[in-house]
Length: 280
Image (cartoon, rainbow, N blue to C red):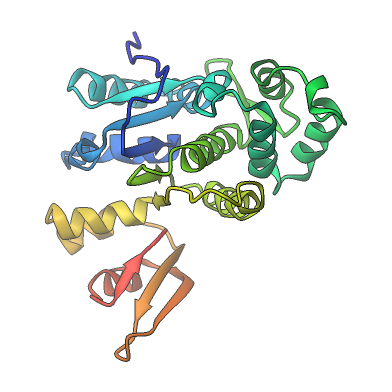
């Protein structure tokens, strides 16, 4: 049974994490294999799971049990319903539309849906946010699949929900120290980066709180540098070739942002390079 509480209002938290299903699966697997990663989650004032992410979590008894365990151990984890995002944005319905539109702007089908079924010439003629966001997820126009338990999986629904939530918190609570999105999904990273640039035009008079990411590779690096796992364990955990975004500082003090595909051997070399910081 899921007893994770629902998040209803902002309570002056300054260190916030948002969890995606992909990262929950990784963290749970590490715990099951005897590698304690919960220490990384104890540094946050609050950890939020959008309802659509929790829908995905519930497809696995292991992930569901892991989230329940975090709550039972006193880690401040909450579920937040997408319909309640308006409470975080002071009920500013026009800005909420712009934030959601920015979040889906990389996906033409969702942009078309927003323009056709949500947007009105006069903002006062629009339905309330809680109504149209509910319909958006119900009508989700991207490809769907049926999970083993019969739930309809909706492509990118959880990722979009994370980006919307992150952007609302960033623009409405600039005093926050940091917002960290845990995800291995590169779409989430791309959606957020694009949305944030678009919203700079909407909120020109505001300074947003920073949004950072922790991919599985960032977590592996932390496990190596802070928890002392061996390089052999890294090879056991990380088995595929994947793209990494990182910065490298040169001897003259300049820094380059790079993105390359790394197999395990090259990744281990990268981890041991003190001039490198892994971003995603």
